[in-house]
Image 1 (cartoon, rainbow, N blue to C red):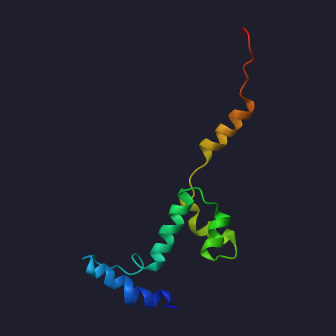
Image 2 (image 1 turned 45 degrees about the horizontal axis):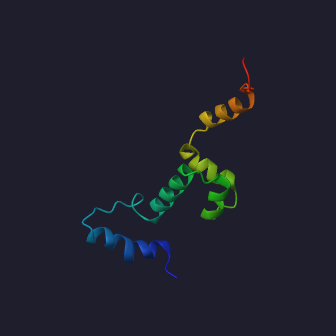
Image 3 (image 1 turned 180 degrees about the vertical axis):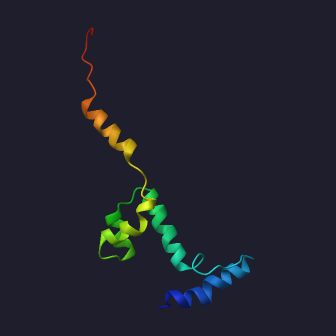
Length: 95
């Protein structure tokens, strides 16, 4: 199996060159792709616990510390959940 650094040198960087793109280390390599994957997963609603498992992190807290800035805000969802509980229910007939 080919390692990450070997893949970058043998496949990834040549693909950039073939596409006429400038390769910028630490931004365009596999590590950058890993961060891109994590950000897309979080934005799509994948839980931090699941993402930690997918990335091979033993502690979801570690994953959260790295990617917490990418976790979508849930303020609106939290308000809607509370509103759903406390909203008056309409009964049939006149009010």
